[in-house]
Structure formats: structure tokens, C-alpha cells
Image (cartoon, rainbow, N blue to C red; front, top):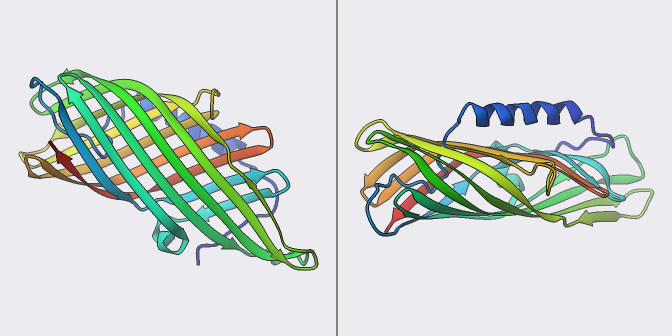
Length: 269
């Protein structure tokens, strides 16, 4: 069982600073990259489209602070995802013309895990439910185009809707629950690239960073994948994805990372 819940109290300041530094390093180092829907396009005239349904086996870890709910440490490793995951839906789409492209990504994750409270007789354990919805729209410009590799840069917006509920079972005190549903939009800057290894295989990567204390204090993402062109219009993808969120507004604090492998198939038309 993947439960691990901590007592009240966060201690995550140093972790946040470390992750912020890592995010900046990733971006400045040019972890150039490709989202799961990246298509290896040419400068041909007319619009080109692709859509990529994918499965992301995302574990979730970090701290959740809610009004009257205290602090809880949500920890669900991707290897235990089938124990905590209630439902998921994910897809990426891209429209491209020449050097310009528009990428849209949608993700919905519904996770739930229980927790124990061995040092408390007031309550007898409980559960935490975390429902995460993400939608992003990014514009990209191809700054480098070569037969063997390309690089895009750009930016856009990423919207979040996160519903969190902490429920405690009855002990000496009656059962209780607390919840919050913050939603916000983050501006982001992004880069991605792809390198061909052969006629059929390529490496792709993507990185973005944003928030800048407009919605979240900081958010960043990194993706890497190995792509296999099964046919000219069908590409299988396998890789790893990580997203970090540091959000603070009023009495709600979220310090969460989502990480795990993904599998997807891109259809071009």
C-alpha cells in the first residue's frame, strides 16, 4: 500500500528552492524538447495536424495545506499508481504551418490514498483525494531546421484546476473533512527539440518554466522521449514526464510534483 502521511508541519522551503534552481538550470541548459505530440515536420506549405492520446503513469508527491485541514504529505509513487489512481484522461494536439506551431495539451488525474494516524486517538486515519486538471496552449517558432534536428522556442499559458479533500475517520472526535478547489492560469516560456537517430528513431525533449508569482509561484516541466516512426503518419512514443507546482494563495498551499513514464501514439494528418 502506498500510504504515507505526515503530521502537521511542512519543512519544504529548501526543497522548493532546490527545485526552482533545477528548473532554471534545465531551461538554460536547453533541455530542448518535444511534447508527446511533437511531429517531425517539414517546411511544406499548408497546415499539418497531429493528435496524440497518451497514458502517463504519474505518481504524485508533495505537501498539501488546507484551511482547517492541516498539512498532509501526499505520496503516491508511479509504481503504485493503480492503487491510487481513480481515473485519467490525456491528449495532446498540434497544428503547424511552416515554422509556426500551436500545441494544446489536456490532462486529468484523479488520485486518492489513505493515511494512518498511529499517534492520534482523536481520529483514526482517513484519506486524501487529489483531482488535477491541466490545460495548456503554447505557440512555438522553429528557430533551427535541419534534416537531422530542429529546435523550437515559444510560450503560452497553462491553466490548473485542483480539487483537494482531506477526510479523517472518527476516533474520539467525530469524523471531519476539509477541502479546497483553487484554479489559476500561469504564463510559461518553453523550448523543445528533436534529433533523428535513423530513418525510424529519434530523441525528443521539452522544457518549460512559468508562474512567476502571477498564478503559482513557480511551475516547471521536463519531458524526454524515444520516438519510433512506425509509418510516415504514425509515431509511437515512450518516455518520462515531470511537472512541478508551487502554489500559495490565502490559506491554500500546494507543493506538488507529478512524475512517471508515459506511452503515446501520434497520428498525423
